[in-house]
Image 1 (cartoon, rainbow, N blue to C red):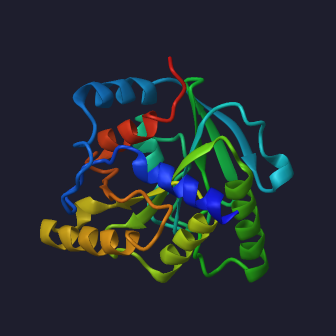
Image 2 (cartoon, one colour):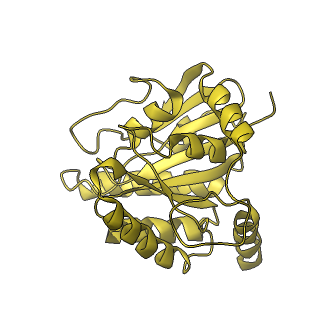
Length: 239
């Protein structure tokens, strides 16, 4: 339904924007210190593994608001999820791209579900298996009313690649609010990072379901992590 898609995207754009080093905007100036502290407390709660689903019938019941993380294989997704929750082993990290082949659910303090989605773009996986992942991913995105936000992770050293833009197109078609999150920014010099943010923001303007501001993070230094927590905590159930 095109009208529903438009309404959903418009709702996403009306949400308060998170300040980055990107272009100036007319929205509120990011998260307050109170919001950042409340988010820190939320993400310090027990984070319990719920399920790992390879197919749609295996998905757990819809019980909590969900925020999901997706990105290219080896983008640092598991490391960022661990940094957000202050844990080193919550999400499995691996030097082998494509290891996360299931939709993995974590219950954060009984208030928010964190969803680790399969990485994309790993060449050594068969096309047939990639197709199954893609179908499962799209079915989850389209058919999950509890899914409130997708964080699309992009390597800050390289910026958007073709597969990332394809993922944005998929999220647009699913009419889901999503936000681009740059990872590994500690490995990028400030002028280069500013250029990546500017280029990424220009692409975002052409995608109706995208949150207009980019979050720059580093799981190594913790940069941007408190702000991303605060952004995601807005979707959690009240304490």
